[in-house]
Image 1: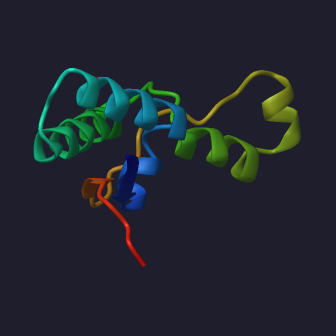
Image 2: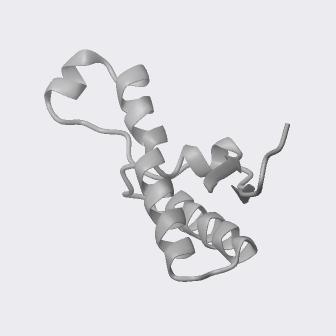
Length: 99
C-alpha cells in the first residue's frame, strides 16, 4: 500500500524529503512496526537539529535567504540544524475498496 508520512516542520527542516523517504522505506522493509518507524524518524530529526555543522534543508534555505551574495560567493554557509518541535506519524493505506 501507499505510505503516508505526516510530520511537523521540525522533521522537514532537519531532514530532506529524500532522507525521510529512505529512512521510512528501509525501516518498513526491515519489518519495524509503524510506531517504531515514526520514532526512528523523530530521533533522526532530533539528532540533526543538534548538530552545529549539519547541512540541513533549513541551513541551505537560510544560506540563500540571509547571507549577502558576496559572502555566498566566498563560500560562506549557514550551518546547523534547527531546534523545533518534532512530531511524526507514519501510516500505510491498505485494504479492499468497494465503493
